[in-house]
Amino acid sequence: VAGVGRVYFSVNPLSTATLRKLSKMRSVIYLVVVCAYIDDFPTSKEGMLDILNPSKLPGGCQVWEVAKRVWAQWQTVVEGFRPDTASITRPRYRVSAKRGGIHDFSSPEMEHALGCSIREELRWEASLREYNMEVRSYLHFGTFYAAIALNPAPIWKTSLNVSYNDLVTESEANPAQGRDLTYASLQGDVAYSLALASGLAEAPA
Image (cartoon, rainbow, N blue to C red):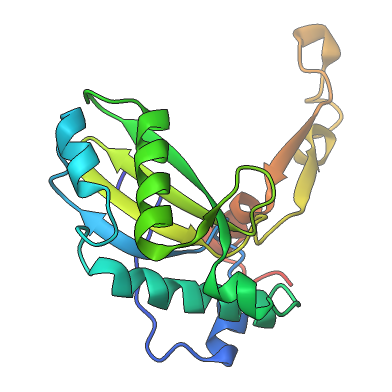
């Protein structure tokens, strides 16, 4: 999506091998399973409260159950542990919300509305501290989506330190002219994308 840094794609069928490949996508930070997407989200608080229910969102409750199964599969294949039956049937979740635009409600009100409706309709267990699943919701003007996060930490966790001394010659690095030697830290996903954009024959390992 232009301007917001998100890419939507579908994977069918979703196999164990595919999940492993997705977990190695170094050019992204987080992967989520989208449960609902709306292009004309209401701006009023009443409209928000009415529509933020899994049963009323596109796809209904069934989509959320499918997304939950994908989340459980990711925990087993990628994160390296197998959730117990209780965690899969009734995961402990929290809801986060980010919002941009003019609306008659706040981000915390969105979190509360969606969190309560998930608990009531899906019978999942809400927990702000001891959660094992995060439901993320985003509203950008009229575009809304809710999703279950797969990876709790960025896929590409490391950073790349670049020395200014590596980029200029000794004569160019003149502290007297205000060009002190400094270090910059790049997020791994940014460094990886820049490496590909520079025309490297092979992606860095």
